[in-house]
Image (cartoon, rainbow, N blue to C red):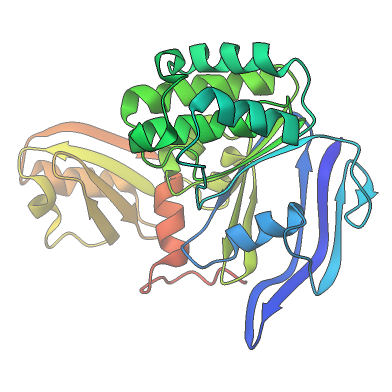
Length: 303
């Protein structure tokens, strides 16, 4: 069952169309990733779902109810622009947010989440004394404290070190396992690949991708090889049948032209250098993102 449905949604700001005729469906209890370049319309879409702004055209339904009505679900929203009352103590701030969102058993929930996200020792500290990562975890707690059915996270991993990113990731998966629907916007393609049940990409206000990672990759086929060799990227100079080489230093991700047998490229490489890895695969989400959004793209994302 779809818990959020957008149909023909358009939003303009003056002469700029931020979101253009957008339709999408978010299945309940899924993790649904929003990706796209800066200024593509991700945050505008999220703000319309949250009723911070309204579409010029189209409809938004949450749990079957039109946006103009009050959805019979709790929603938690972590905006990209963080906002916390710096002079308040952590415990007081979370108590305030819990009561503001009509949560139940707030004191117990505050203590539980402070402990879960390793902030108990700071409960009586003022927000202004926290590091950026701690503030991020604190605002995440404020977002989920009232046990929302839908959780919308705009760049939730921004500012977190690897340890805290892992901690937050585990919490998000746990919330999903208990029935929450998670929408999160991210520029971290690796995290989107690993976590999301469905991925939606918006580019210049238009939907260009929507589906599972597998279904998205299947649109491109096995046109990618990943290679490690002693020569590195220099080994590909002069080899025909290569459209693009993404050089990562120790590894190169190579896009092969259509109708070119990757084994031919392997044969040419072996004449030049020793190969330690050669893998034929589908393009990564990061590569697909670049193909669509880079200035020198060949694909037409609106085709």
